[in-house]
Image (cartoon, rainbow, N blue to C red; front, side):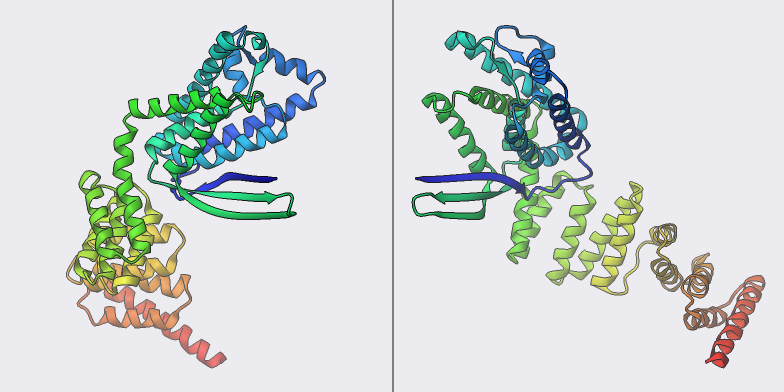
Amino acid sequence: MYYFYWLPIGTDSKVRGVPWVTLALLVANVMVFAALHALPGAEAVAYRWAFKAGQPTVQTAIASVFLHADTLHLLGNLVFLGVFGPPLESRLGAGRYLIAYIACGWLANLVQAAWIVQAAPDLRSVPIIGASGAISGLMGLFAVRLYFARLRFASITMLFLQGMVKPSRFTLPALVGIGLWFTLQLAYQLAGVAPETATLCHVGGFLFGAFFALVMGLRSEGRLESRLARGTRYVSRGEWFAALGEYESYLSARPDDPEVIAQVARVQRVTHQESQAVDRFAAAIRLWLLRGEIRKACDGYEEMKRLLGGVALPPGDLLRIARGCEELGRPGDASRAYEAYGRHYPDREGAALALLKSAEIEQHALNNLGRARFLYDELLRRPLRPDLERMVRERSELTDTALNGAGGAA
């Protein structure tokens, strides 16, 4: 006998932020399952809240989405929800995602109920339970919105007569993997080989999910994001100019995406377009600053310096980076940013104060007295206001005293 099982375990679609709704749905399904199996008379409670073709109500249609027959039924649905849910939630937003999930589950149950009434009326009192209709709806949404993604599968092949069990992993394009799954559901329904499984619920949920995706305009969003996916794949193969073409096409429609702008800068640096890369990094950092994403802006500035050397941002942005690094508890980065401001913009008001700030951080936060002394000496070679010059001399003398004391102790 030969058996082949496969299960999706992941996708290459990035998840932006924490998928709180998906996590809440996972927890809710587990808690409902645990609570019902811990209660006396759990089967009666579950039956009362389960959706039945002969007694369809809105309450039971929604409640049944959170009911499962056994542990295997629950775990299978949780795996599919964990794979397809987070990427969709991060693109649809929590509200649209939750509405689509509940609506697909409800409508999928109605499809199964309608078939039972017409084709198998003896099953009108049999409960229709499980989240698979709602999750099938998510798969329909995924097939429209993230059709360009690749799915990772775990599989196990069993040849019982030869006594061989072989686990493996493989990847498939999302449309191929989901298409095979959908075809299998149709085949099961037409052949009647799995009467205990509500396969029409799966089919209906998938179709409703795909329909909702088209109505919400997710197809055009998917086409746009597919350029990013192709760009990433070109980068992985070292096809730099092809990647740039995809990224630039994306940015022509979404010019304010700092992550993609920074990625363009990285590719431009590899292709020896240093001046363009500097401009792109600066644009990405400015957008992060405007959005208040200070950590990303600081990280972007450090990456720009690491990849492109001693480059500078516009003065206002550079000062905000210095202050942001200081607020984030990154004194070394803050010191270098203040110093960069003082060196690149020596004629601007505040340049001397920026160097003084860098020296203070080196002295007090980093305990780098030699570096602090170097910066104080550089300041004293500049024309300073009398009060500022006096302050720098006093601190320089204190640094000298500390250095001499450290030398004597050694």
